[in-house]
Image (tube, rainbow, N blue to C red; front, side, top):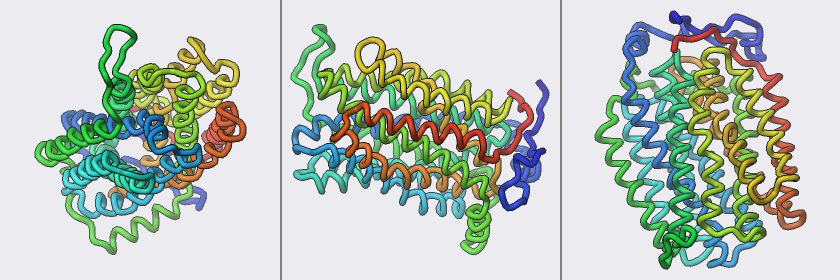
Length: 440
């Protein structure tokens, strides 16, 4: 199929103020066209690999929560507080990450370096935490570090591959899903020390495991800063602080982009509320081993490894709205099915099918936002998307914890399903830029 640059051609692509977002044709200059005409996939896949390692560490904390709970004697609300603390710190991190990315585009590798160093440092603190509040500080550092990755990585991909933005972001998230899939399998096995009756050893205590996890994070930081120096090469130079705030003001007044941030926040709220208490439910109510819990959590992201790039490429061809709306609607239906299929093989299958959409829709929502922002604001646009999710996501785990205490896991399912329903409705009514089919 010949190249056909996506354009905004209808009122649906205009923001609520009546101004029409710039088309990709309008935001490209000769430098960007040159980069896009002979794109190097090394950066895309390199950042995806780093994203996967980061998410390996991020996902490990989820599997360790039941063990941490047992050691420190934590309540459901305290468990929700761990997720909320991580989400709040992630939201705060998006602000400096977005500013630094857009102002110092040619220093992106160093921002990514700082991100991974913080994740490793946070895990070291978690490993030695004697009480809950010290643990929370470590969780906050991990959350800050993981979120520092998003703006420079997603922003760079959005600028480097404007015609294949959906696919580039989906490829990046596929790396995350590889990390999210392998993490619960490996961490669950190391905690339990068993795989059925085939492999049996004493298991590794969660504190030691947290210390071990810090090692690949720090090593990845060193690899990133030495091998990914071309990140940000598509930029013509640094942006002054005054120019940045002018651009940021336009971004914050773009209601279409804010709508995408809200939609992304609803998806994140579903994720934060459902997944953490699914782990608690399987471990404490169903009596699953750490290994078996890890297998179930891995299923949530395993199917997405295949579906995410397919959905991203499809959104580049047929448009963002059909893909987003279908995924959000499917997610809603699947969540409510947990009220009926809440154990055994039926729940395992349901988790796997949910995994086709649970994370896969996130890069499509981000790409829809990137379609409607000014050139040079990709970092801040990405930060805005993740900040919105963090604000909403910081509150919902605590609410879910209260619901879990009084109504059990089924109450959490209804809560998450209701938020997914709101997200599905938003995906149908929020303005998005219409896109023509893009080249493969």
